[in-house]
Amino acid sequence: MARADLLRVWTSLLAAVLIASFLVAAALSTGAGAQEAGCRGQVVLDAGHGGSDPGAVNARYGLKEKDQALDVARRLEALLEADGHAVCMTRTGDETLSNNDRYAYANSTGAEILVSIHMNGSPDPAADYTTTLFGKWRKDKELALAVFDGLSTLPAADGAGTMRTRAPPSFASGVLLKSEMPATIAETVFVTSDAEGRLLSDGTGTRQQQIAEALGAGIEDYLAAH
Image 1 (cartoon, one colour):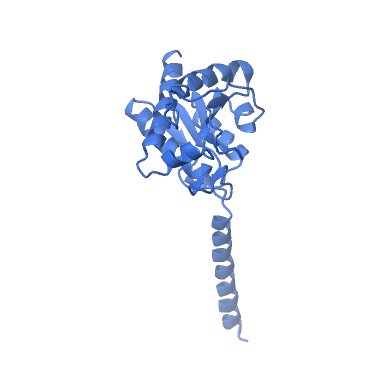
Image 2 (cartoon, one colour):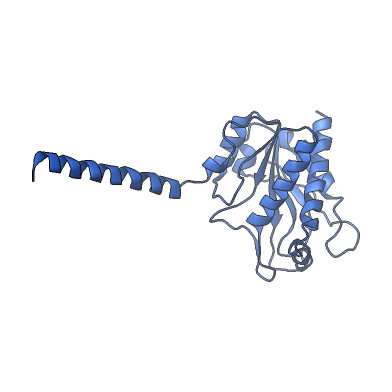
């Protein structure tokens, strides 16, 4: 083979390798590219789970925690921004994120608080209550209690008064312990509950909006006191 022909072959092979490497890197991305790069905010919202991690699942109503958490996070983002707060999101789509991805991103924003949004799960379809979690005792507990107070005003899914509650416990989560700002995990409702499943899947978004508004009330109260 002539030298010029050999050079063309190697050039083509190198180009193919570079393109393949780029595609593999994109496919293996943990989702950090979907985070708002360079975002500087007052509040970081972390929609729990995502990508290959669905979280709790309600098979009867076709619900996945990861989707519901993101829906609520987007609604809450809109509410907070309408009130003048700058918001950063750890994920804006269906990406797989590690705990390290989440707290590292939160720390990069310089935000005042981090709220991680989840829905609980249980094999008992009647189980449903709301709570929040805290990790760093002094730093997180006040925020956890403020968000808990907001969630405790949620109407019960079965229509009987307000949500049952469970006092916020401490929880050794990397997202909580390694975030530099006060942080809490909000276990808003049980996505596995039959009553919640009916509301969350009715197509109106009413229940998701109620949850976002309850979270927003707690966050606003905390920020107003600081």
